[in-house]
Length: 243
Ligand code: SF4
View (cartoon, rainbow, N blue to C red):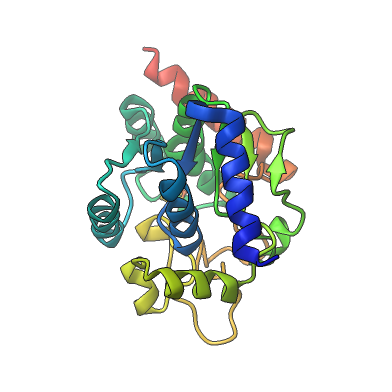
Protein backbone atom coordinates (compact mmCIF):
# COMPACT_ATOMS: atom_id res chain seq x y z
CA UNK A 1 0.00 0.00 0.00
CA UNK A 2 1.41 3.46 -0.89
CA UNK A 3 2.20 6.13 1.69
CA UNK A 4 -0.55 8.29 0.24
CA UNK A 5 -3.17 5.55 0.45
CA UNK A 6 -2.26 4.85 4.06
CA UNK A 7 -2.40 8.54 5.02
CA UNK A 8 -5.72 9.04 3.24
CA UNK A 9 -7.12 6.04 5.13
CA UNK A 10 -5.99 7.61 8.42
CA UNK A 11 -7.69 10.87 7.44
CA UNK A 12 -10.93 9.19 6.38
CA UNK A 13 -11.03 7.00 9.46
CA UNK A 14 -10.53 10.03 11.74
CA UNK A 15 -13.24 11.96 9.91
CA UNK A 16 -15.63 9.04 10.44
CA UNK A 17 -14.71 8.74 14.12
CA UNK A 18 -14.70 12.40 15.09
CA UNK A 19 -17.16 13.84 12.56
CA UNK A 20 -17.71 17.57 12.97
CA UNK A 21 -15.50 17.70 16.06
CA UNK A 22 -12.19 17.46 14.23
CA UNK A 23 -10.15 20.39 12.91
CA UNK A 24 -6.97 20.93 10.90
CA UNK A 25 -4.17 22.87 12.57
CA UNK A 26 -1.66 24.25 10.12
CA UNK A 27 0.92 26.98 9.64
CA UNK A 28 0.78 26.30 5.87
CA UNK A 29 4.09 24.55 5.63
CA UNK A 30 4.25 21.73 3.11
CA UNK A 31 3.07 18.98 5.45
CA UNK A 32 0.09 21.01 6.61
CA UNK A 33 -0.96 21.71 3.05
CA UNK A 34 -0.76 18.01 2.16
CA UNK A 35 -3.07 17.13 5.05
CA UNK A 36 -5.36 20.02 4.26
CA UNK A 37 -5.65 18.76 0.68
CA UNK A 38 -6.50 15.24 1.84
CA UNK A 39 -9.09 16.46 4.34
CA UNK A 40 -10.69 18.99 1.99
CA UNK A 41 -11.21 16.26 -0.62
CA UNK A 42 -13.10 14.15 1.92
CA UNK A 43 -14.77 16.72 4.19
CA UNK A 44 -14.55 20.29 2.83
CA UNK A 45 -16.34 21.82 5.81
CA UNK A 46 -13.66 20.78 8.29
CA UNK A 47 -12.41 23.88 10.18
CA UNK A 48 -8.92 25.01 9.21
CA UNK A 49 -7.14 26.67 12.11
CA UNK A 50 -3.94 28.67 12.14
CA UNK A 51 -2.20 30.48 14.98
CA UNK A 52 -1.83 34.14 14.11
CA UNK A 53 0.78 35.11 16.67
CA UNK A 54 1.02 38.75 15.63
CA UNK A 55 4.61 38.12 14.46
CA UNK A 56 4.00 36.09 11.29
CA UNK A 57 5.78 36.99 8.04
CA UNK A 58 3.71 38.67 5.35
CA UNK A 59 4.42 35.70 3.09
CA UNK A 60 2.29 33.51 5.36
CA UNK A 61 -0.71 35.75 4.77
CA UNK A 62 -0.16 35.51 1.02
CA UNK A 63 -0.10 31.73 1.42
CA UNK A 64 -3.36 31.82 3.40
CA UNK A 65 -4.96 33.87 0.61
CA UNK A 66 -3.85 31.27 -1.95
CA UNK A 67 -5.26 28.41 0.14
CA UNK A 68 -8.56 30.18 0.73
CA UNK A 69 -8.98 30.75 -2.98
CA UNK A 70 -8.02 27.24 -4.03
CA UNK A 71 -10.38 25.48 -1.61
CA UNK A 72 -13.07 28.19 -1.29
CA UNK A 73 -12.66 28.24 2.48
CA UNK A 74 -12.04 30.77 5.24
CA UNK A 75 -9.12 30.02 7.51
CA UNK A 76 -9.79 30.63 11.20
CA UNK A 77 -7.10 32.76 12.85
CA UNK A 78 -6.40 31.90 16.47
CA UNK A 79 -4.99 34.99 18.15
CA UNK A 80 -3.37 35.52 21.54
CA UNK A 81 -5.14 37.44 24.28
CA UNK A 82 -4.25 41.12 23.59
CA UNK A 83 -4.02 41.88 27.33
CA UNK A 84 -1.53 39.03 27.87
CA UNK A 85 0.60 40.17 24.93
CA UNK A 86 0.51 43.79 26.16
CA UNK A 87 1.53 42.70 29.65
CA UNK A 88 4.34 40.52 28.34
CA UNK A 89 5.70 43.26 26.06
CA UNK A 90 5.47 45.86 28.84
CA UNK A 91 7.45 43.72 31.28
CA UNK A 92 9.80 41.79 28.97
CA UNK A 93 10.07 43.83 25.76
CA UNK A 94 8.69 42.89 22.35
CA UNK A 95 11.73 40.82 21.36
CA UNK A 96 12.12 39.07 24.72
CA UNK A 97 12.84 35.76 22.96
CA UNK A 98 16.38 36.94 22.22
CA UNK A 99 17.24 37.35 25.91
CA UNK A 100 16.95 33.78 27.19
CA UNK A 101 15.50 30.38 26.39
CA UNK A 102 12.95 30.81 29.19
CA UNK A 103 11.75 34.09 27.71
CA UNK A 104 11.51 32.51 24.27
CA UNK A 105 9.37 29.70 25.67
CA UNK A 106 7.30 32.31 27.52
CA UNK A 107 6.64 34.22 24.29
CA UNK A 108 5.60 30.99 22.56
CA UNK A 109 3.31 30.21 25.50
CA UNK A 110 1.56 33.57 25.33
CA UNK A 111 1.37 33.92 21.56
CA UNK A 112 0.83 30.27 20.58
CA UNK A 113 0.27 27.65 23.24
CA UNK A 114 -2.30 29.37 25.44
CA UNK A 115 -4.59 30.61 22.63
CA UNK A 116 -4.37 27.26 20.87
CA UNK A 117 -5.22 25.30 24.00
CA UNK A 118 -8.32 27.43 24.43
CA UNK A 119 -9.51 26.78 20.87
CA UNK A 120 -8.62 23.08 20.88
CA UNK A 121 -10.63 22.57 24.06
CA UNK A 122 -13.69 22.83 21.81
CA UNK A 123 -12.81 19.89 19.52
CA UNK A 124 -12.34 16.16 20.05
CA UNK A 125 -9.41 15.77 17.67
CA UNK A 126 -7.13 17.68 15.33
CA UNK A 127 -4.87 16.94 12.38
CA UNK A 128 -1.24 18.11 12.48
CA UNK A 129 1.57 17.80 9.94
CA UNK A 130 4.33 16.41 12.13
CA UNK A 131 6.80 13.87 10.75
CA UNK A 132 9.17 11.71 12.75
CA UNK A 133 12.15 12.49 10.53
CA UNK A 134 11.84 16.26 11.04
CA UNK A 135 13.92 16.25 14.21
CA UNK A 136 15.03 14.15 17.17
CA UNK A 137 12.28 15.59 19.33
CA UNK A 138 9.71 14.26 16.85
CA UNK A 139 11.19 10.77 16.45
CA UNK A 140 8.51 9.08 18.55
CA UNK A 141 5.33 10.79 17.41
CA UNK A 142 2.35 8.54 16.81
CA UNK A 143 -0.01 8.56 13.86
CA UNK A 144 -2.91 8.78 16.29
CA UNK A 145 -2.04 10.00 19.76
CA UNK A 146 -4.98 9.19 22.02
CA UNK A 147 -3.07 10.25 25.12
CA UNK A 148 -3.30 13.80 23.83
CA UNK A 149 -6.39 15.84 24.60
CA UNK A 150 -7.80 16.49 22.09
CA UNK A 151 -6.62 13.45 20.14
CA UNK A 152 -3.75 14.39 17.83
CA UNK A 153 -3.71 12.83 14.38
CA UNK A 154 -0.50 12.95 12.33
CA UNK A 155 -1.23 11.13 9.07
CA UNK A 156 2.26 11.89 7.73
CA UNK A 157 4.15 10.66 10.81
CA UNK A 158 6.23 8.15 8.87
CA UNK A 159 6.53 10.14 5.65
CA UNK A 160 9.91 11.29 4.39
CA UNK A 161 10.62 14.79 3.08
CA UNK A 162 10.56 13.34 -0.44
CA UNK A 163 7.15 11.74 0.14
CA UNK A 164 5.83 15.21 0.93
CA UNK A 165 7.43 16.76 -2.14
CA UNK A 166 6.03 13.99 -4.36
CA UNK A 167 2.47 14.51 -3.09
CA UNK A 168 2.76 18.27 -3.61
CA UNK A 169 4.03 17.82 -7.16
CA UNK A 170 1.46 15.17 -8.05
CA UNK A 171 -1.40 17.33 -6.78
CA UNK A 172 0.06 20.67 -7.86
CA UNK A 173 -0.40 22.17 -4.42
CA UNK A 174 0.60 25.76 -3.64
CA UNK A 175 3.78 26.21 -1.61
CA UNK A 176 4.60 28.76 1.05
CA UNK A 177 6.65 31.49 -0.72
CA UNK A 178 9.48 31.30 1.84
CA UNK A 179 10.54 27.82 0.65
CA UNK A 180 11.81 29.47 -2.52
CA UNK A 181 13.93 31.77 -0.32
CA UNK A 182 15.72 28.83 1.33
CA UNK A 183 13.52 28.25 4.36
CA UNK A 184 12.88 24.64 5.38
CA UNK A 185 10.67 25.31 8.41
CA UNK A 186 8.51 28.39 8.77
CA UNK A 187 7.20 30.14 11.86
CA UNK A 188 7.23 33.68 13.25
CA UNK A 189 9.15 36.27 11.26
CA UNK A 190 11.77 37.22 13.89
CA UNK A 191 12.40 33.59 14.89
CA UNK A 192 12.85 31.93 11.51
CA UNK A 193 15.56 32.17 8.90
CA UNK A 194 16.64 30.35 5.76
CA UNK A 195 19.03 27.42 6.24
CA UNK A 196 22.30 26.74 4.50
CA UNK A 197 23.38 23.50 2.81
CA UNK A 198 23.78 20.63 5.28
CA UNK A 199 21.85 22.27 8.10
CA UNK A 200 19.08 20.39 9.89
CA UNK A 201 15.51 20.89 8.62
CA UNK A 202 14.57 22.92 11.71
CA UNK A 203 17.91 24.71 12.13
CA UNK A 204 16.36 27.98 10.96
CA UNK A 205 13.97 28.09 13.91
CA UNK A 206 15.35 30.08 16.92
CA UNK A 207 18.75 29.69 15.28
CA UNK A 208 20.53 31.53 18.07
CA UNK A 209 19.68 28.64 20.42
CA UNK A 210 22.23 25.93 19.95
CA UNK A 211 21.51 23.40 22.70
CA UNK A 212 17.73 23.56 22.88
CA UNK A 213 15.01 21.52 21.19
CA UNK A 214 13.59 23.51 18.29
CA UNK A 215 10.06 23.33 19.61
CA UNK A 216 7.61 25.99 20.72
CA UNK A 217 5.60 23.91 23.18
CA UNK A 218 2.62 23.31 20.88
CA UNK A 219 3.39 19.65 20.41
CA UNK A 220 6.08 19.05 23.01
CA UNK A 221 6.43 20.54 26.47
CA UNK A 222 9.52 22.66 27.11
CA UNK A 223 12.43 21.05 28.88
CA UNK A 224 12.06 20.77 32.64
CA UNK A 225 14.97 23.08 33.29
CA UNK A 226 12.99 26.21 32.35
CA UNK A 227 9.47 25.18 33.32
CA UNK A 228 9.58 26.87 36.72
CA UNK A 229 11.13 30.06 35.34
CA UNK A 230 8.47 30.23 32.63
CA UNK A 231 5.73 29.59 35.19
CA UNK A 232 6.96 32.46 37.36
CA UNK A 233 7.19 34.87 34.42
CA UNK A 234 3.79 33.82 33.13
CA UNK A 235 2.19 34.29 36.54
CA UNK A 236 3.58 37.84 36.68
CA UNK A 237 2.13 38.60 33.26
CA UNK A 238 -1.28 37.20 34.13
CA UNK A 239 -1.37 39.07 37.44
CA UNK A 240 -0.85 42.34 35.57
CA UNK A 241 -3.72 41.54 33.20
CA UNK A 242 -6.02 41.14 36.21
CA UNK A 243 -5.25 44.66 37.52
S1 SF4 B 1 8.22 31.90 17.51
FE1 SF4 B 1 9.23 33.75 18.37
S2 SF4 B 1 7.80 35.49 18.12
FE2 SF4 B 1 6.69 33.55 17.71
S3 SF4 B 1 5.71 33.10 19.61
FE3 SF4 B 1 7.65 31.94 19.65
S4 SF4 B 1 9.22 33.31 20.54
FE4 SF4 B 1 7.38 34.54 20.09
